[in-house]
Length: 266
Ligand code: J9Q
Image (cartoon, rainbow, N blue to C red; front, side, top):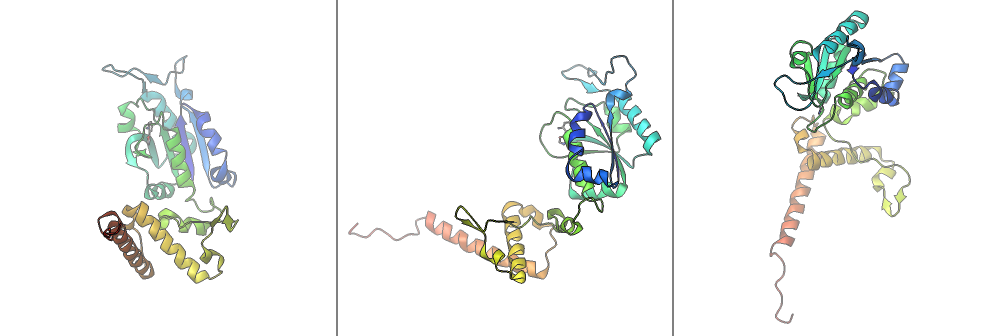
């Protein structure tokens, strides 16, 4: 899987790429990531990459020429990228599905946008898509580029040691993860759920499925619409709903007047 990143801050992405799963994927020859300094594609003495917006207003806008030249160089030296992604808050939200699609393309170039803006000709005539990683203000697209690369790289066979764990991942199954514990079995009076120490693999599996469903229902009910639940999951889910309804009844009975009246003697 090939990635090309075009940025005005190459050191901002080089550090993270040299650590963890991604760096091991690179070392193993499974990933090929090249970082390009946008200033190397300028033609003026001062290596200027931005300019004032036409029409006036605050801030500077990334000029089109260096970005077009960077993609020309990438195409000549590394082949034509199958996608040219502009990181931008205006883009389509990154999802696991996006990551799978980019993985399938095999060669992706990522242009790091700036908070202040990128010349519209880049969006219209160079980028093939715009991707946002979420609704918050960032100063630039470097962190989003790293997020995209991490999410895509993990899906390349062999990059994550344990392929089983990739298949079991939250967004592969459509449910949040179940709670995990490690030693000690009792941490300052907080005990690990006894079932996990019981050695009953069937019961452990069932407990984990129930807790994953519980957590998803409580925190991300929106995920349940898409989750693939087998008949056992559906049964566990019905039980959870009943549990919640009876808990809701208890709560409302103790917060309304549904309690014993004071007796005359009080
Ligand atoms: C380039 N805020 O934000 C969320 N996803 C991408 C971005 C972003 C930003 C500013 C510049 C990308």
